[in-house]
Length: 56
Image (cartoon, rainbow, N blue to C red; front, side, top):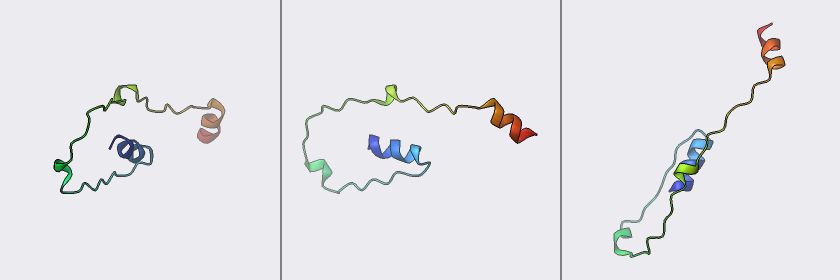
């Protein structure tokens, strides 16, 4: 799910997850470690020459 959300955000799209209806019957070990607090959005780099050229 984490990867789907990250890809949707990166591609400025949506995330679609298909979850089987018997998922609640499965027992899994809870070892999930969230990396959400490590996410850093990219900061666009500006080029003053390009800005001046565009505004001219």
